[in-house]
Image (tube, rainbow, N blue to C red; front, side, top):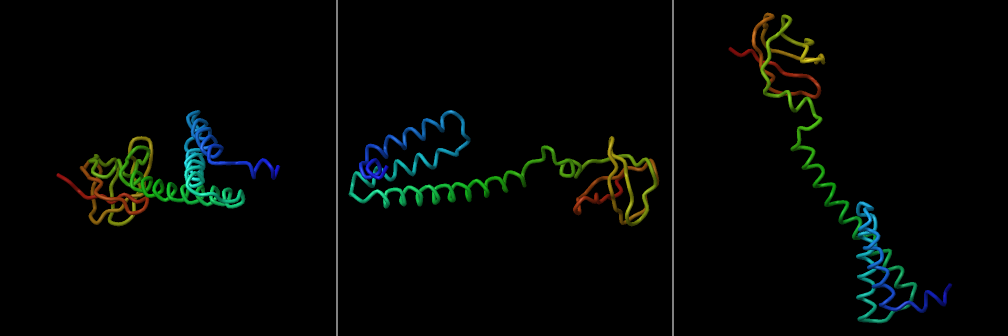
Length: 150
């Protein structure tokens, strides 16, 4: 096994990198992309200078960890921005700005209101009789904030 590892040259690393990138094309969702890029980087470094096989594998491991960590940080930042801006499957964000006709009287403070097939906790700073129009102006956690409109 050691003889095989000692015999690796830059062509082997470049071939390994291309093979890992080809596996990535099968749809592994990025798992092999960074390993393939890391193997290509080791192959390019090995074509410029020579170093022992333990250093080659250590460089491959280090490049893999660094590229994966950099991608993870970038993706995490992108996901947070995307989650903050989307409303799909986030009913509470979709409700803000909606106007509704109250089915029950609303008292100052905490109340329960029905919107479609769900009941929500709601609070108001004014009393509103049933049948009046109200607007959802904000969300405080999972509590709707209502204001009277007319």
